[in-house]
Length: 351
Image 1 (tube, helix red, strand yellow):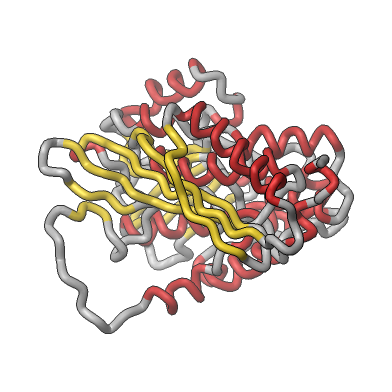
Image 2: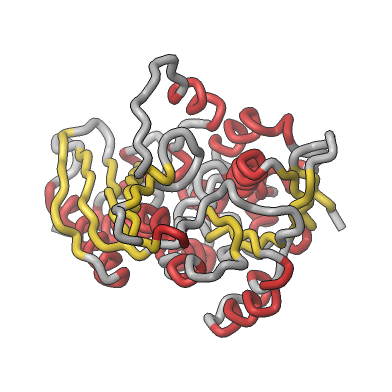
């Protein structure tokens, strides 16, 4: 049976991290009046808007635990497995850790899609786990109305080297290790408008592991880190600013962006998640043009690392990025963190 006979995106109402519940609704879901027991070993828990939970093991090492899953963002099942796995593993890298183990989460419409298609999803997952140097060691599956796939991932990190999204300091420069725009390109694909070259760019971006995060965890001058996924750059930067008690100024023209995005924006190819994102945090952002809003709030799937670098580390950090062959636009800062002054949490300089 040819698994390519089945176009996975036709079987789901959402796509990739664009399926994420909006920040505003998520706040309501997570709110609780019930006191939870405290655990002194828990370095990062549910009280923080971070990428993973972190538990101090008491021997100088901490356990990172995370999970991420979503509905198909591409039609090919093998590529869907690769993208979902790279996205889930990214949470460990975003905490500065090393992934050590993964288990699969699979929801499958068994009355609509044959098991051979699901098998290809798992093959894609195994390929990315192997690239990350970990085993796909088990998992759980259910009969589900729409295809869903992801991983639960564990990682390890030195307890004193955990990177959080809430520990940035004023003066830190902001870097992004992947260009924005895969949400826009994915929407174009669902509408049959995506050009082959751009499809390849999106796939390459979404299947690239954020392995540099493990290295970044060892660098003291990196003060905060997170990965950019379903809330878009502005959403995840908002979390960094609020958690750190800072504000940000972005130089829009320096933000890494996939070059062909204006072509698709002219055809109104932007995901519904963009507006949901903006409705959640747009009141915290300074004045933007429509194009800036569509790009900066675009839900990313398996997006890059958002890194806050102290001024004294800029030269070394940029050299490190260049040595790892990141494009020039990703080797220079696009913004800076500053003390809050009563103005917008994030201001965007169009020049």
